[in-house]
Length: 136
Image: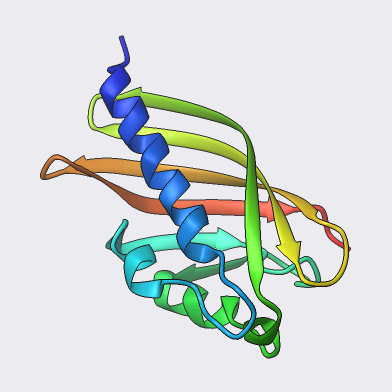
């Protein structure tokens, strides 16, 4: 049986990431806060922007550089969460999170994140994120 406290804690990690990744025009995401939820060796596989031709596999540092493409800082960016499934088995968890990418121009872009987490030292930490979206 899944522990409700763990499910709530895992969902809180995911919620924090979306909050920390959003920023107003002229600002940037809270990268230090964002980084604090990941294992240092975390791996991300995603199409960062709808115009990306392929899914990129990258470290957290590579993702953070790619996320701030030219011009995005001046535009601002948010993500709005939708349906979510959380499965916890012992000290591992999987989250399927639907969301929309909200750029300053254009319609929201529907996407999905798949998170894998592990509980280490009593804290839930992300070890992997796989994501994709509807391409433009």
